[in-house]
Image (cartoon, rainbow over all chains, first blue to last red; front, side, top):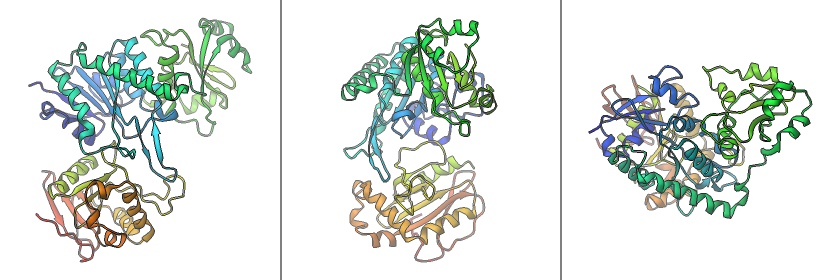
Length: 321
Length: 165
């Protein structure tokens, strides 16, 4: 039997994951430590953010990355967990997000929440660009929208793991294709009910690059402007944070990955885009931003500087790639 | 001992004693259990006054609110006292369980058929590693480094849980 190692964010998720397969019962458990304090492959995989589970084989080769949440990724929160998964895809490691597609939200305004279907299309694009499986598994809920928690909610994952272990986690495993098709069917079903999900959200607008740059209240140096004008169109991800509340990342830095893969990215490298990705902060001054969100690789604030062509403030631009 | 390990050991302890896990919010990460939020005022926005038990377990005799901590902490006793002295919170706790159909789902409805019975069967438990002393209203499960456990009943008979060894 293989000697697996389960790296996890905490023991509760490791315990849950380990119980998904009898073949994992003898797996070694390790906790993911802070940035740059893990073995090299784990450090690389947590570079953008920490996924819940990273499964390694006996040679420390990553086999699978998994993220689990009981929250329905609705509206803008859909992007919150994406940064935890993208690094794995970039490195060719199959990745699964396990979450409820639809479930009841409790509280005064209780009701059934449905997932933002753009997530499924973003996964399809990521898969195609990196030629690596990434897909969503539904944590089923009952007719009242309450999450199933009698153990059967894990059945699908158990089957997937059984299959992957039997096939030595081969990327050619047929189960991947099955879930790619299922996810895409789910996406099509959902956009037929809610067509708005087939287009960018209000916060992300596709505009002619020239038109947008000319609308800004400040001048951009000619050489920089020429670089940005290489793509005729740009996706403007408008982030309405105030200067007082701009020291944060979630859900924006995760969501930027979704928008990049959905509307801009055409190749594996971050600059391989057919549209620019602009992060636009109309209420924030550039110098204040640099103090509150420095490009410091020791903290998550460096995620702001990962993939956008540039960050645009009310008085200037920053981090041209 | 880490808080997440105490949480796992607590679940295993109560499952072994034939309790059913009803709800839970682990110290970090996520579990496959519903999260129950107990508020004083249901209409108030946000979670300012909300209390989320680490675990809630039930059997025919008890519904137990459990706090899992690495070591004994007076703050946890104060938190549980606040719940116990607040009728509105206990009512909201009952209503949360009813609204999620948890009594029906786990076949406990006949044993907790109204609020008064529910309230009389409500118990509290602290689980942690390290030293302990008996508590008036709170039962204790103490865990040791070798993962063994010891159960200590509350002193007050109205709060005591009798569970098989």
